Image (cartoon, rainbow, N blue to C red; front, side):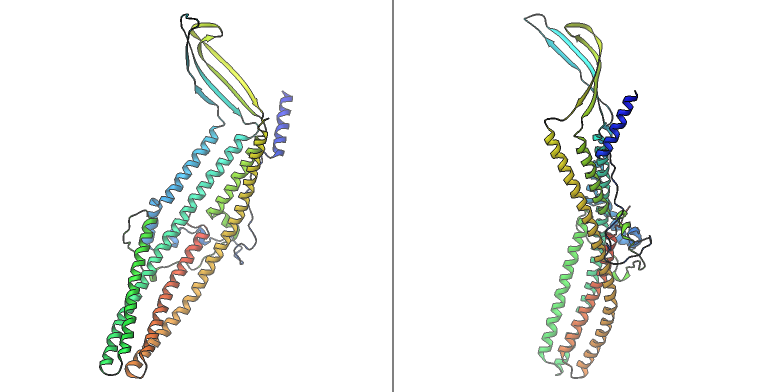
Length: 454
């Protein structure tokens, strides 16, 4: 008995040394200066930890996001993927239990025209593999890592869906605002054309000025039609995200949107617990790690206990009727010999996959930092441009009023009025686009920090 215990201890120590039972250690550090700049050092409640309802307060948008989380086909597929991984994990856990099977058999035989004999057996067979060398244990841990990865994938799809719906919604608000500006400009040009025509009739303007004003008026009308077409296309894109047929969506106004202004992005290491794609990449590395362990355990023998118990009326050369109880037990040990080359090849494949997963995890971290940096810079830039565009619009409005009065009562030409009005329209459209860019960069920053978690 003591020799058996000592043998088991020696085997366990040797297996730990060869890496079969080694445990995966998760990453606890990130590349230096991951965000590309200095960030807060304390663990603050960053933007990525904010619930999406707190960030997107528009009731119409909230309703659309809730519908999308129920109906989007990509998100539903991700949920089914989780169920598949869960079933695979359950199968890996059940592999530790004995397998039982009922194997009834009946035989009718006749020799040299003698009377036929009927024999039967009604056994219950059992088979149980002893996981001495860790093959099933590593397979279970690998399945567990893949199950967690499927959860992270579902969360990544959820984050992308929320950000996609929000971006599409605010695109509609931007186009609505630009359409309103273009329609107001259209009305202003209509009045300008009428005024210029009146000046021509009074001998204070020529036909060239009227024609130029009319041409610009038609151009503005054309831009209105283009904006209406873009709105229809974006509404169709939103319908696809919601798995609905195309329709018009009720929505708010761009100027009414409010967002938090005081937030932090958090320290880089915290992003490991927020970004689902980073977690998914590490789960891939973990699964590959245990896959390598499982491939390494294939070098060792597999031990299987099997047996059967039941009734039969055939025992050796004597036919017994009725049947008698019969039981058997077998222990087998299988050591790879002639297929060792194949086992070595499988191990090399698993090792290469683990190294590939490690590189993928590292690249995912770098991509995450780059996305945060891009979104943060875009948000800060759009905030700075907003003040400048406001001042520009005020100056252009003053210039337009002055040139219009000078044309009516002075010697200013229609070209100066045309230029002033075109410049004002361009600035107003740029201001609206910048408002959308600011919102979009905030959404992208929220997504880059792993926001939208359940």
